[in-house]
Length: 453
Image (cartoon, rainbow, N blue to C red):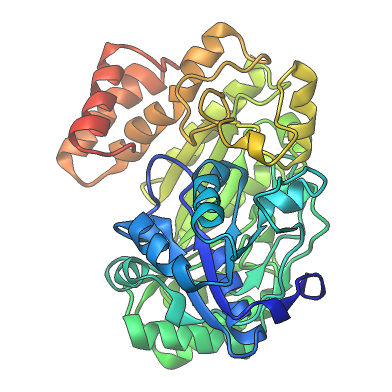
C-alpha cells in the first residue's frame, strides 16, 4: 500500500474515524485508524498529523471543521456502516477546502476493491498500510480515561489465519502476524506505568495462536509482579495437552487471567462444520470446563438464525447454552445473536441467492443500512427470507432472554438474581422469546436506564 500512495504530497494530514451508527462507541479503541495515524506520522517526512475519532470527541464536527482548515490531506478509515457518517464529512472538505486531497481506506475498500468510489474521493486504498508501533500521542482523552478507570487494551498480533464462513477473514488473503515481542512488552510496560489499569485486554483475534509469544507475555507479567487482571480471546481448539494445558492454566490464573473469550457459535456440529469453525462441540465443553476448573471466566459467543439452520440445529445450540451456563457463574453467555450478513465472509455471498440486494458503488452504501435488516448489532426487526415470519419476530430476542435469564440468574446481586430466575424459568426453559413482561423490561432498560443490554 505504501508504494501506491504518493507520500510526497502529504505533510499536513488529518486522519478521521467516524462513528458507525446512531450511538458513539465512547472509550473504545479504533485500532485501524490509530494504526494509520501512527504510520503516517513515522513514514511521512516532517509530518504534521492530527487524529480525530468521532466516537471519542465531544463537539466532533466543530473540531473537525477547525482541524481540516490547514490540511493538505484528509484520510478517512471506513467500514461499510461508517460510510453514512463519513460522506458528509468528505462533502464538507470538498466544498470548503477543495485544495485538500481526500483519501479513503479500510476494510470496506479491501472487501470491494472494484466498486467505484466517486469523484469526491481522490484515492481509495484497497489494501492495508504497513503497521508499526502505535503512537500513544494519538490515543483520545476518553480512551485514556477508560484505560485508567476500566480496561486498557494491548494488541500482540494482527489478523487471523482461520477462515470462519461468517468472518471477513474467509475472503481475505491474510494470516496471523505476531508483533515483535520487544514491542509487545514495551507497550504493556508503558500501559501499566502510564495508566495503571485494573484490567488489560489482549485484543488479538486469537491471543494463543502464537503460543511462544503468549507464554512470554504471561511470564513477563509474573516476573514484573503486575497486579492487573487480564483477558484475551482464544479458540477452544487451543485446549489440549500441548498448548493450553493444566500447567499453563495454572500460570495463567496466577498471573491474573480473569476471562477468556470463545467463539462458540453453535451447539450443532452440522452448523459448526457449515461455519468452517474447525472445532467440535466436545472441544467447546472441554475448554469452558477447564477455564472454570482454574477460576477463569469463559465468555461464550453464539449465533443463530443462519441460512440452512433447522429448528433441530437451533435446539442443539440452546441445549449447549444451558449446559455451559450450568457449569457455574464464571460462564457468561453472549447471544445467541441472529446472524447478520455484513459484507465479507463466504456466507455473505451465499445469502445473495435469497434475493438480498447490496450496493454496487461507494456512494450507494450511504443510506443502505437505514431501512435494511442487516443494520444494528441487536437488530429487533429483521426480515430475512431464509427465516419464517415467526422466526424473524422472536429469534432476535433470544439473546435478551439468555442474558437476563441465564447470566443474571448467576449474579450475586439479589435483584438481578430474582429477575434472572423469572426469565430463566418462565422464558428460557420454555424457549419463549417474547411476551409483554419481556417487552416492558427491555423498554425500562433502554429508555429509562439508557442501556441496550
